[in-house]
Image (cartoon, rainbow, N blue to C red; front, side, top):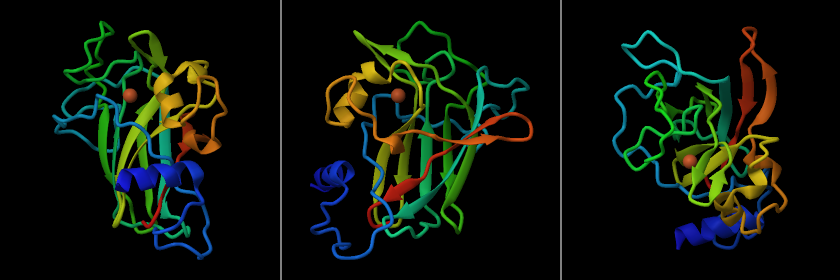
Length: 216
Ligand SMILES: [Fe+2]
């Protein structure tokens, strides 16, 4: 029932009956719920910090294009959700998950953490350093590049995914089309994408991804 309501809210953004927010001024539509997928790390690595490109005890760095992702966890009134727990997990640059259910022949990257457990600060803010994930094949079709999120606020849990603008596979991703409740090559809502925030002084590309929970 809760997932159904969230799904409706995620897609319509205006169906507020029963949410406790009806009639109040709202700053933003909630982030769209999306599939969790088969690769949530049930066996979580001991190193799950905000630097995914270096594994504790290993000298090497993950292969791939570095990205710094940051954002805030907010409620629909635009108020921060301090202490929100954020888990992110993703494929490596070659499109492989460090998960026993990922039977792809694509190589693992022993220097890539693939998972982070974060806590939003007093402003609801979070940040992590990673690499742009690779796309991966699922049977007949491809998954566009994406990073999975599970966010536990004070009242809501949200499972979603962040996508990358300009990815040529976006229109062919059947999982994404299903999450958006549309056919392949349908219109893409802008807020599913990491937003370009320029580059750090060291050249690392910065992406912004705010998470809007219904109640917080
Ligand atoms: Fe995935």
